Picture 1: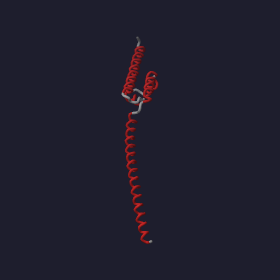
Picture 2: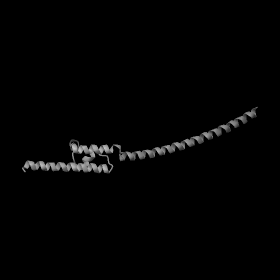
Picture 3: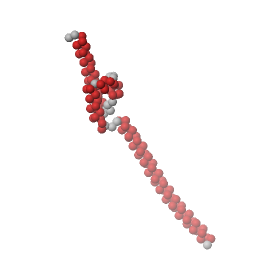
Picture 4: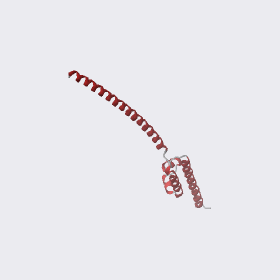
Length: 128
């Protein structure tokens, strides 16, 4: 085996190691329920953006993971949804409290109007 052949073999081993590293990280992210993205894979593996786009084996793994995750919700979105639901529930409670207060005030107003009307009738009778 000459130097060129050894160099090709070493490069092939390094390439296979990179591919395996990328595959393991993709699987780990899918298993953890974390959204797979090129940016996160770059950070976790130290491999270049071009590697993930140009390598057909890795690209196929990424595409497969993204298809699996298409129906999954982003954990951050779940937290935001929970916070918004909590806020919405608080607003609905406040609206209900205000509706009850409004109804009570309407009833008090009707009572006051009736009392005033009776008083006015009494005053008018005095003048007749």
